[in-house]
Length: 342
Image (cartoon, rainbow, N blue to C red; front, side):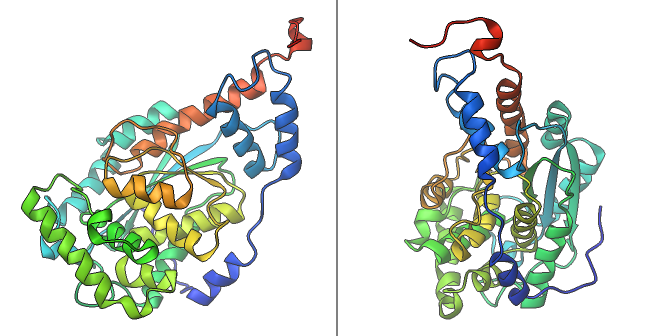
């Protein structure tokens, strides 16, 4: 558990950081492509693993790429919109699940042990939920910017692959509202069953999202204002972590719908902002597939998961690690004495 930083960031400071994003390391990418062509296999036969190895190299800025210090950060926050009955679970479950994470009893704990990933859980003022965004902006600018700064502080430059996740009752409602604000369409395009709500509650959730976005429409052309009005503390922290990881040249694995929606705020500000990110899996939340299409992201895994808490992102660590191990460890045709393609 970590205390929030005392310093208060501002949206202007966030925008200034976005103006100076480092790009991919093209030299490392070229070295990866050269080696890939020499490995003992038909060209392209490892499919996405080849792409992932090159992606890691270009964002770690080194060749060969390696995943030796994977880390997982899960941000937890409570949402005032939960009072509107949009979830199957009460808001107190967020705090109960944080305790479960800290006690080692959640799925993410088992997956982090399997993936040899350090797990840190960041509690975002669970006793002070955001405002009900159907009635008022979820956060003031100071609160939203402070949450982003908190997320930025969670990124350790020694980490060579960062998995991000969240926990927060009603955060799929917030994610759906954010996506509607950022990408348009109808509320029904983005709203799903979340924790498993029935048809009547789904219709209610959809109506709440549509009305909330309409209420804040005047300021939603600014993605940071959309995050402030419709997001949550944990979603703002994820956006901050993604930004800090870019500045630190750390590749990122995003979890499901809520996590990807938080990151999408940055891409709405700068189309290059998520180039260092892969989406770990496709959630069964229907809005996630639509969001991936809008972001131009292809998920690594598709396992019908919808748990959150970083579970899909942690599972994908092993896929990315496998890609790097194959790339670095396989023999070349010359080394193995194997004839190359004619």
